[in-house]
Length: 401
Image (cartoon, rainbow, N blue to C red; front, side):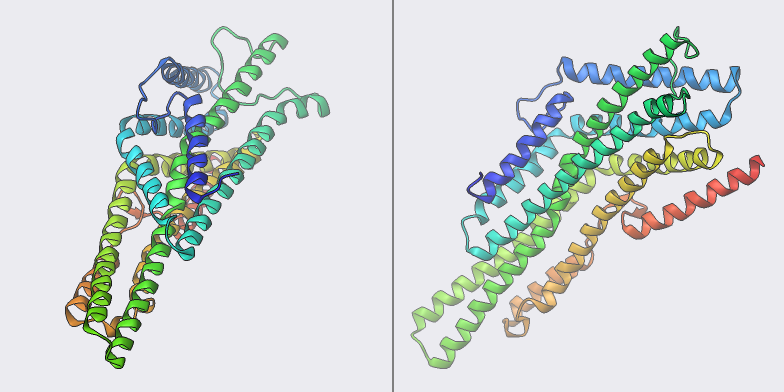
């Protein structure tokens, strides 16, 4: 069992490194280089694109099966997400290491302070670990349900359906051998694709789950500052010796400067997260919207028995990402509220009150995560996107009718 919250954080990062290493993308390691495993993953993803292109050609030009085309596009979105996350991690590995190192330094520094700081750290790492456990269970359930549909229909209804819809050149899906080979390949793709997306999401989820920690630590700093302010007022009223008053004022100034630096640290942290996950968020939201619309359409037409599980996966991932965006928004608002409610600002000297006002102005202009620097990533955006997808699906069905 970990003895300190810093050690708990190291354990969490170790799990992320191991998961990423399996995918050939342990970019948090300073010694990381693209290796044979990385290239195997890249080749496999590109092969999936080739097989998907071949399947689309067969469905469009040979069989003219348009509903099946949409079913093929459903899984294509997840493959694009995984590829984007892999390339993004490799390209931005230095920035991702900086985020990891920044969080680790915070744990090491504030683990040595009083109990309020340690409570903030412990709450944060516990929240991150619970989220990881939820994602593990979620991925296992979704993958199991996607794979289990094919044998269930074969045993119960004696109906041959495929786990996925891409075809393999040279393999006849109408034969027993072709059916078995293709479903085995589909199961392998589901397992490795699910794990790859899970591993790619882990670090982003952990980083964003630490964003509220910055506000919590700021609150602790404000409380410490209030104690010094009250102590200074009490010393002035009791006419204590000048040396003591001078020491208190010096501690007060140092802590106030530390608070301003802490806010700058938070702004830098958020800016790096936004910059490095710009394309990931854009691709994730775009492909999830495409997958949701395609899956919903297939389910309404009754052409995909296993579509309910994938629809649930897409919806949950959509709202997980939107929820994380809301976490950042709430944290930004929390910084503003703390400047008003957590500090006895009216007892500050005029010059320092002006500095606090400047910090407040910067907090009021802090942007959250966005989709393509156009739409804020939030639960409200997720709800609006869901409404749009449903409307588009209904329009498509009316058009086909």
